[in-house]
Length: 609
Image 1 (cartoon, one colour):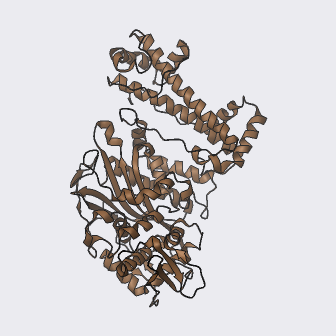
Image 2 (spheres, rainbow, N blue to C red):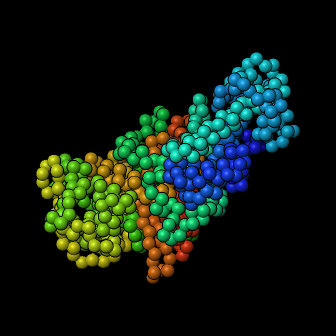
Image 3 (cartoon, rainbow, N blue to C red):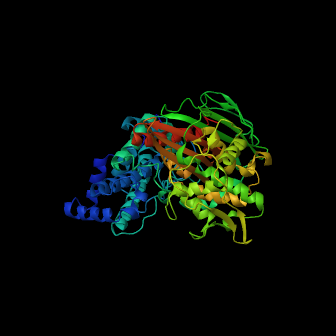
């Protein structure tokens, strides 16, 4: 979209949203109130589709949020046509985003619609000359094939399509609102999609630019926290849950997507080096380190992060000759500390390695964990890991299950295993998770082989869980990139057929900071084959008098945005671990989401690699 002559989409206010909702019922207060009450009752059926899942279910919120969504969809439809007009002004061939109307608005209304996308009527009257000059590039697509190429006709033809797009959007959303009032399940609205020429609409580029303003993003996310009456025990994002995630249905495909490589024609990677946008700094990717060896970490590479982020490590991957090479960045990445529940995945991965060491052809999905004392029923391995990560409490608490997974190795033995994996000698991993083990004497039993593969160990000397963001980034990157690193760099003995069970379980993490980041950046319609595996951690440190939140994640997707400039799509794959600290839990929740958003923004714009 031209930034000089055409307006940006405007922000819809709460009062406008409420007024629009009331107008749907001819401003009859009783009818509107009755409809809002039904929306409150059926909140769970429509909230996600209207971006309302973070708000308190009230009648007022129902009016505001549905009305705002209606106006926002109309505004977005208007500027899809505006984007096409901007392309025509530049002399490019245009495909209309909607079909011209059979019964269009009258000429005066069409001209008014045309003027509404420009910063002034004077600018519009000047720009229309370009439409005349490029008439053959756009007029037929807009339904103007029978019109003479002159200024008034250009305004009418273009304005009619703007009005048609807005009317279509209003009718669509109004129909959905009425269905929601009737208690029907509503599917999420789709994000803006690519046009026929595979050119993403510039709204997404604008969102990436606007997201540079982290102060505003923080304010926007804090509004969500405030509107849902967030507190330390009820946060908007940290425990948001996978059920509301638009990527919930993708989880089953994560293992296959993580096996894929760029084909170098339709999808490419960075290669051996990349020149960062803005700084012109050249980043050289290096081989992923073998087990027991530490990489070089750029300890100034994350200086842009907010001061609330105490420690962080980010590892960006690039395919070079079908193997992933990496670039490691950190802030206090080797500073040892308490990372709470984010470490729970480590004993689980240790179990997988040891099971496959004893039985290389075992698929952990065929295994159950049994109680040697026969006090508990046999439980599938995947279901237990799912409960640890999702906080579903379907079987037991996450803490008690994590403590159970630590029972298969002595505390010193598990600590030494962690050090051997990461090459970092400065770590402690002998602590517990605050609750007794769900099963104190567990064993891993292969149902197909009818054989016990792993038995409990003595605890040995106990201690604390004090790791680093580097350690956690190393573990999650080894898991996600298993197929693309050398054998010497992989988890010892672990087979993908078992690791993929952990991948699927980690897709269900209750923390959805990455979901928020993708939505905030407007990327939802411009990425394919997404993978989001992660593990949250949080707690209150009385000794440090502060809340501490941890987010460990591997994010991968195919970025389709480069196609707008005629380039192949690009595979983005990045692992990270962040620990934030603050005396205000609600602000820290919003801050963590903002900083994950900023990391992802810089990866997509290639300001970070």
